[in-house]
Length: 332
Image (cartoon, rainbow, N blue to C red):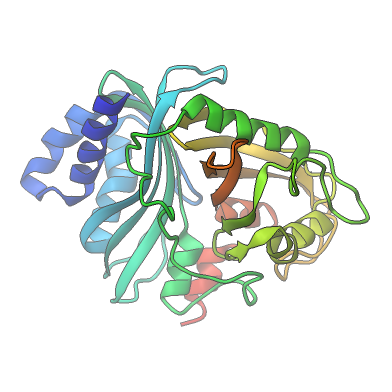
């Protein structure tokens, strides 16, 4: 769907960057009147174009002065899950000077890159449904008020793909890329409780390349190779949530050498161990998840080279009884 991808990428950029006098016209062209957008906590569900503008787009444009959209991945395809239809998926940053509060988070007055994972369902060239995870805890980190203990991995700006071809890709087979990802996800559900290992992940027959890069949200950070992923994320997560079950996805698409999947929520689990400074609560929790993958087929069998991960930790920690935005604001 290359024509729709290009047109919609331009339209989404205009939604945040257009002059105020042009904004309403663009919003009416791009967003269906009865569109429903689910945004990361504490914004959550916004139903109808007016609510979407007032609850998300207008505050975003006000909070980040001279805001611009900077896409790292922008793909589209037919959703193979039950909702079907044409979908877009993106990893982007909203770039501007953080001059006014956003979702209650106090501004820094400095340059900010607000990372965002996004899925859009289309009816023609209008958005009828969206799921968006803006990483507000990372925005707090950039303001010098990180609401977590020291990162497990390396905290950094999400890089674009190493191949620099993630925006409206023109090469590769999306179905094959999605097949690689789905095979990996199927194996990942089962793991050895003593080692945390799952079959089919690494090695000659594994789905991940030996030099895989995993880019995670604030609270986790990013890491390199499978051993880095385990030490910087997987081990701590499984210790805290050993019964976690994932893969409850409303959308799975492939495009070129890329694939994207998301669940709202994707994961259910019980909080039985300490996690990122929060003692076990014993509560049943859910987690909103977005994963974006780049696959490589240069050696024949497809391997996952890079994985960008957006998690709604504001919502997860709210279920634990922690207000991350209030915690960040209290830091200065």
